[in-house]
Length: 365
Ligand code: GDP
Image 1: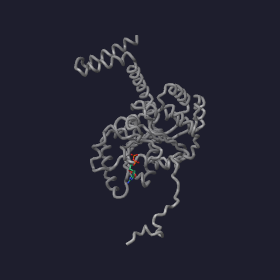
Image 2 (image 1 turned 45 degrees about the horizontal axis):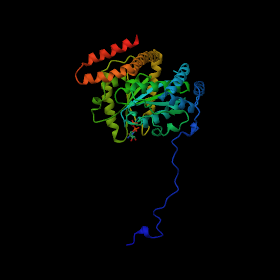
Image 3 (image 1 turned 45 degrees about the vertical axis):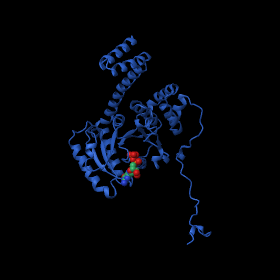
Image 4 (image 1 turned 90 degrees about the vertical axis):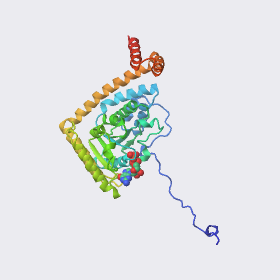
């Protein structure tokens, strides 16, 4: 039989006119595409204080830049913004890749802006972004609703290499965002290793997103991370996964009972939700705001921020000492030889370290 497609009257393959692709750029930003002129520090500060998102974005790019001239101007901008910062709630959101962070943050963000108003910045700490040459976190296109919301600012993780560097840049970006009037800051982080500690050290509430697994989910999660969490939420509680999620929630609640009450005096809660279907989102934010009320009343909110500032002071000292040591040209030359000596077994690591440090201290005199 003749194939129907060869019939000139066949109309099976017609192309409809359709609709064009949706822009990935937030249309509310009114971004000027080709701005080449560099602003002065004062102009950046003025723009930021006026809440200008384009200028805020440019200032964050300066903060993230590795070019020394950018560094100097970024520091000036940060210093001038500092007195206008601090006036926000900072929420850390952590979970392994696939836990549903971006789906959830999209929902969380829309909910929070609707219920509580204000402006929301979504930042990220993702030290893996340097290695994989692309940030897993904070990609604008992953948060479809928030990325086109006029009161949101989404910024992928800076790719500065070391975790310390990435975390510092995120912290500096928080200052700029707060000065620009963002009173809600989400810091997203991947639930693997040290980045959670870094995130925890800069937020008021640390939310851990978990998935219901095969019943052994508690084994995969490190004790330290559970202790950091102010709330644990089990995502994807939908379809035929509901029972498993509720069971997982019970396991987490039981496990949390074994820990002493945290310093905040707040017993972390465990909730289930579905980021995808938008179930249980309100309950999560009711809980978070209840926590914030609780710790603002009992003084823990300010105490935690002060402790974080203290931690940052030591962290900055440590970072700068290390940088000064490793970037010293004499030391850099000696390091090679010392390394080889240790590798060949000619020197013990302790002797090699002592020689290097002695030489460094001698250079300081
Ligand atoms: P992230 O890597 O933590 O940012 O996770 P994503 O938000 O990209 O989600 C990973 C996958 O899980 C995607 O395929 C989502 O569609 C899916 N997902 C996210 N939230 C839910 C949920 O509440 N229920 C279900 N069933 N799937 C979800």
